Image (cartoon, rainbow, N blue to C red; front, side):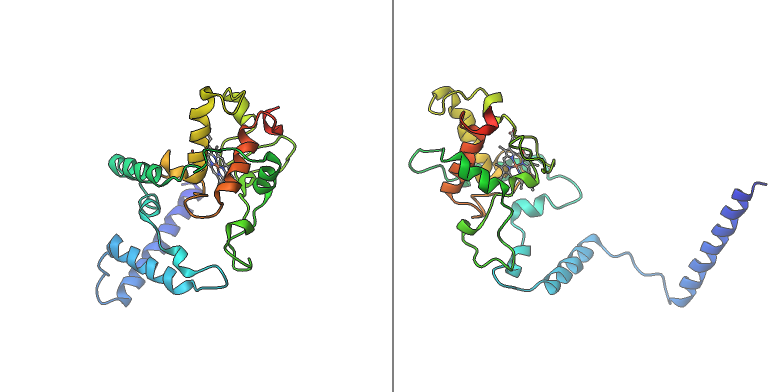
Length: 223
Ligand code: HEC
């Protein structure tokens, strides 16, 4: 008999002994707890663990429909996913003046900045927030530190054939990019990307500047 087998046997005996001792201590085996009860207990624990501090309010832990549907151990059913995407698309505010692009230099600053929304921040105003894009995306090749949760956005406009920004041939990609930045769930129900416009993390002018970083043929991203 190999020593590994002996060890396995004695371990099994020890586990059985512990289990018997545990059972002996209880009047009856506990009834299985339903997953709904466990969810309620977990939610109550979350609610009890967070409090308002500065601009960070505890109501942030309340999930909206899309967040709740995407927090389960299974992806949402097809009709739910379609509804999240349709509602998100309908919520997008398109630029009122029809101008989609701002200044890529300001856009690069915003893409670099991870500031905002923490309890130490002085205000929740969009002007105090960055876009934190490099945390998840490569954008300009000059930046050596970036996350890879999202796809690389290097050459974003160039790869999609944007040569002149007001060319009608570019309209579809320009609009899609605005929509993606405003509410990423419009195109992918359980997207992990922050909903910058929808959640008031960035305002329309800041989004214009980031749009220019990605799409302006003069932006270093498109060289
Ligand atoms: C927390 C991570 C995260 C952050 C922060 C983030 N993104 Fe994303 N982004 C993603 C992921 C993941 C995807 C791919 C899945 C999807 O489409 O939602 C994505 C997709 C995109 C796409 C679509 C790409 C394509 O080819 O269709 C664009 C454009 C984009 N992000 C731009 C940005 C910009 C600009 C910022 C900063 C303002 C940003 N993202 C911040 C995670 C992030």
